[in-house]
Length: 116
Figure (cartoon, rainbow, N blue to C red):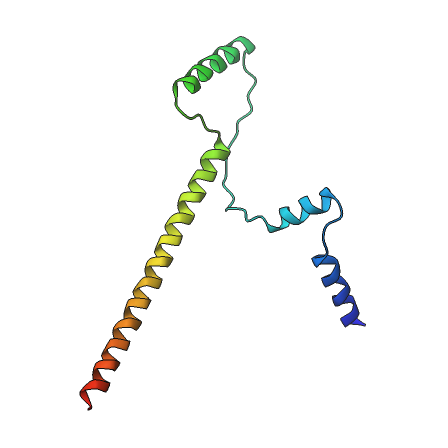
């Protein structure tokens, strides 16, 4: 009985999605999210004219900068840089291991040739 249920689940999972909602859900499940980041937001009632002036100043600053970014974009950029560093360190370790194995192979070959 359990085997048939598992087979049904596999069939359901691997079948082609019928509509866009199922496709979006499957794509969402496959997404990889970064670590949670704490952001503190203080909600405070301010004078509307003052808020409007501050918004105007911020918009001028954004126009001056070459690429304005939001908190989410900054966070994504940090995550990408972090992943790049991790990938570099992993690839460096792999390269060191390959070099060690190559040197061991060379030593073994030399020992074989010296025996003749």
